[in-house]
Amino acid sequence: MKDPIRITYRLSCPKEEAEARAEAILLEQTVELPRAAVRNRFVERNILGKIESIQQVDEGLSEVIMNQPLAATGNNSAQLLNVLFGNVSLQPDVMLYDVELPEAAAQFLPGPALGTKGVRQLVGAEERPMTMTALKPMGLKPSELADLATSFVESGIDIIKDDHGLADHDFCPYMDRVAYVQEAVVKANERTGMNAIYAPNVIGSLMEMLQQISFAAEVGVKAIMFEPMLTGLPMMAEIASAGPRMAILGHPAFGGATRMAPELMNGKLFRWYGADAAIFPNFGGRFTYTEDECHRLAQAVREPMTGFKTCLPVPAGGIAFDRVDEVLDFYGRDVILLMGGSLYIAGEDMPARAKEFTDRVRAKFA
Image (cartoon, rainbow, N blue to C red; front, top):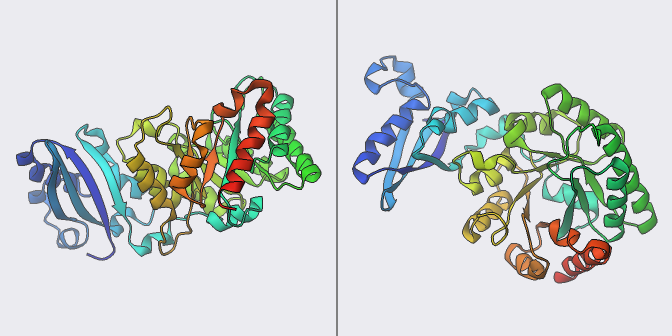
C-alpha cells in the first residue's frame, strides 16, 4: 500500500469479538461494503486497507492498528477526518486513539504557520517559558476588557486572549472589543517595552469568521484563537494556509463530545490542522486529563515531524498559583502557561498576583 495512514482504535468489546469488529471498522471507513461485495480489482489493491495488529490491553478492551491508504482522503483535510473517524464515530464502543501520517500528508495539511520559533519571536521570548491569560468574564464592555488587557501587559503577561465564550455579543460587539483591546495592548507595550500580543476569539459562520479575521488583521492583531471542534478543523487549516499570517491558538471547547484520545485531538490534529499553540486541560485541575495524557499530548506537539513545524503546548483549566513551579518542571521551557481564575480570584490584588506569576515563570530557567 502506498503512503499508508497508521490508525489505532480502542474497542470496548469481548476479546473474541475484536477481530470481527476490526474487520468491520476497516471496511466501514473506506468502501462501506462487506468484503465479499468488493469485486473491483483497483479497489481491492488501492482502497481496501489492512489490519496490522489486534491485542488486548485490558479486560474488555482491545487495541486495533490498521493501515488505510492516503489515496482514500483525496488529499482533502475534511475527508481525512472522514477516513479516520467518520461512520465509526457513531459506534459507541470505538475510540480513535492514535494516528501516524505518511510524509505525503504534509502536502495538504498546513501544520503551524509560525510554529514554536515564530510565536517566540512575536513575544520576544527566545528561550524562556511564556505566559498567557484570558479576558473575562462574559458581560464586560469592550472598554472594561481593554483596561484588563492594559493591566495584564503591565504585569508582564505575554499573550492576552479572549475567553472562549466571548463572541459577537450585543453587549460587547466583536469589532469594538478587538479595536479597544488591541489599541490598549499596543499602548501598554510602548510604555513598558513589552511585546505582548492579543488573540481575539474567532467564532461564527464561515463569512462571519472571515470578516472577523480580516478586521483583526486590519487593526494589527498578531494572533487569533480558534475553537476548531466547534468551527471545524478544515476551516482552521484553510486559515493557517491561506489567511493572514497570524499565530493561531487552538482551543479545545466541544472536544469532549468526541471519543478521541486527548493527545491525538489536542496534540496531533490541532498541530496538523494549523495551530501554533494547543490549549488543553492540565492534569490536577478542574478537568479530568491525566498526567500521562498531558505528557503524551505535549510530546505530540513538540516532537519533530517531516513537513510540520512544532507547536507549543498550553496547559490550562484551573492551574493553581502554587503549582507554577511543578507545572514548569513537568513541561520544561517550550510551554505557555495559561492562568485565568487563579489571577482573577485575587480581586484588587490581581495586578500584583499577575506580576508574581510572570516573574516566577521568567525566573524558572534563568
